[in-house]
Image: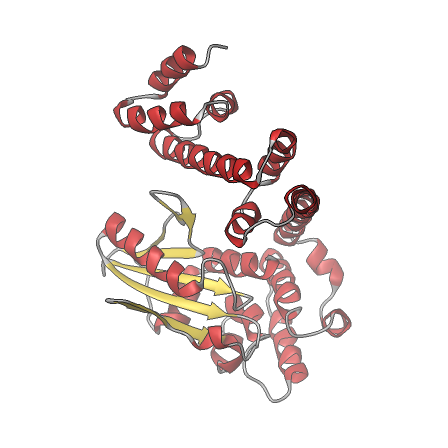
Length: 338
């Protein structure tokens, strides 16, 4: 969501201000580290390595309380991967942006059989706005802080924004305020206090809007394809069990298009289950290859997608012996002649 992206941008642009707010420390020995974690890649929102203290600060920004996988499980997953990769102390904070009474925003740990993992939770609507108003980089977050009179708080943010003299910083922070404040205020209220022309000059604002448009177009096509495919499956087989429906929900637009073609050859729902299982195995193998050798080209991915189940099983075994992409090319040329 755009609001999550705004928070990631602010943390990356002004990391020391966020550390001061979230940890109460003045620091200079920090380094922003890549957010994609190894193995089957997942992406954390924001990671900072405190070099002198040998400590990682991990922040997750959440607009909505519900997520899949659930946030507690994701936080444990992030912690394990970071611990394995860096071997240092890890401090985790989940920051909920939009006010809600949903039970999920009051959960600060994962508890399972023989397993317990805790992390810190901040509900922004309960936070004192004073520290946020005192730091320009945190002004967009101040719009969502605790207040008996939210409109007055928004006016205070506008006054602080007006004090910023540097044009680029002023434009970018105004754009960030516009998007985050939209979680609490209607657009007319925001427009009365913040000049739209200042936001439109912001490169950050334009970039976020463009990404949102592109994502919306792609997601819209995917949802349309999924809806059509589900109707075809229900018409063909009567019912589709919940487990298969869940697998269908995870398919990309390209995979949904491939399935719509393969569906013509299916005789029973079992054929669908076999296809989905094969698709999952292919995706796992491609992710493993990307992790080992970097992004493999589209032609190689297409060759892998044409493999049969026995061939996929064989590839899953022999890829452990590959030393380079060249070994993969040789193997594929032998198994799947061009």
